[in-house]
Image (cartoon, rainbow, N blue to C red):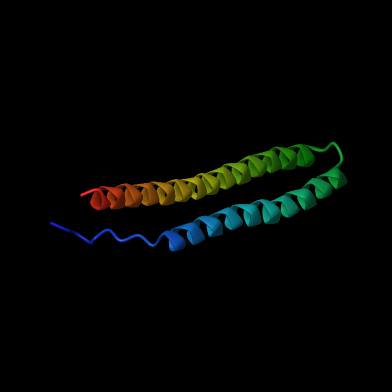
Amino acid sequence: MYNDALNVDLAELRESAGKLKNTAADLNTAHGAVHSKIADLVTEFGDSAGAAALRGRLAEWEAETQAHHNEVINHHGLYLWAEKRYLETDQGNASGIEGV
């Protein structure tokens, strides 16, 4: 029995993957700009305990940004992988029907 409950628009999936990739790039750009400003600001604190604390926190923020970027890029890759698998499945099913 045919079940059309699973209907995937591959163009929409590809578009969503592109949006995820752009989001990851935007995240890096925006956070990178802020991190740069903070790094410049830290120099004004000299060798104080506050400067050391801020440098430590900045390193944590940079690591968090990279982790978020990696997570979004991973989702981008999964969307592309899903698109490929749906296409392969559709092509395989179509060739099976044509061969009957």
